[in-house]
Length: 390
Image (cartoon, rainbow, N blue to C red; front, side, top):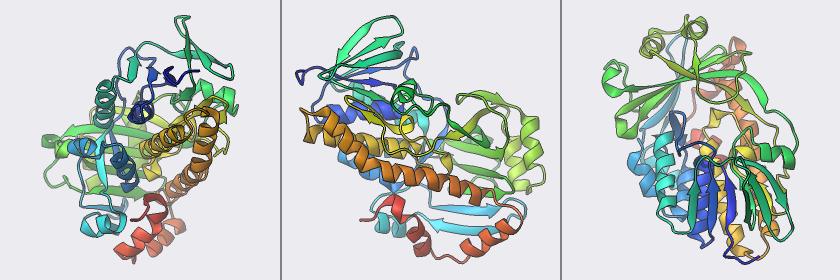
């Protein structure tokens, strides 16, 4: 098939858009299908480690993402029962000297809008809404996808960026439903004016409690304030945007310090999602079809790496396609080979971090012993495998 035929992408979230842009950046035409009636991102704040900025710098989008972001001076962890500081990690000059890139926090809608604008500015990217990929077939020299309106579309290859509940993954990997972690997250966003003055902090602050944690930080250049409360629950509901019961949440946080309780009281309506992931796999490619981001390696949010890993995926995938433009199955295999151990390690380590955040009793005491005496350099050492060093 001629290189002028488009590469097809299923899913117009963060992963789908950055993949489309990276491929177009290398000169490949792309046709992207989003099942919703408009391109929008559900959710609130996300954290962006140095590794995503290293990837974005390669395709010229680093400054555009940082323009809407907040760069916190530090991360800190506190005991939610006593208020005691467990550890503080500076994110300023020393951090940037070590990793070569900043640490930032942003609204999911802001980074999504940046990627959308970048795609819309390219004449190689065709964006289509109200288009869901219901089926596909790989014909060896091309693929066809069947859309929800019955239309059949032909392309060079198919990249599934359709998230944790990807129906394309089921055809490729066949591992059924996601793994439910037993953790549930409530999220809310406040205007800065609605945050009590003595509680507003420029840092990313995590309150670690027994089988809970609560995190807050500014968004959108400091104009908003992001709150996320996580606790253990056997509730399961697919998706990202159900309304959460305040009564259920209070049962888990009621014994915690006033700073936590006062902040939780500020939110009128909480949006809820059940935290899920999957077991790491090393093979998510079949011929002219491959998976990316949460479709390939969904992970719990405790390392704040979902969007970061999807962006890294996109840059690596596009580089491999550019290196082998006439053999996309080989390019997809090379992309998978370059990514599966890194993403698998991140999936597993995110689970471990969740255990550390939610420790109780003796485990919580051990957490304090192991973290409280750390120097900034020791903290950086512990995360250098993920953030990468210059």
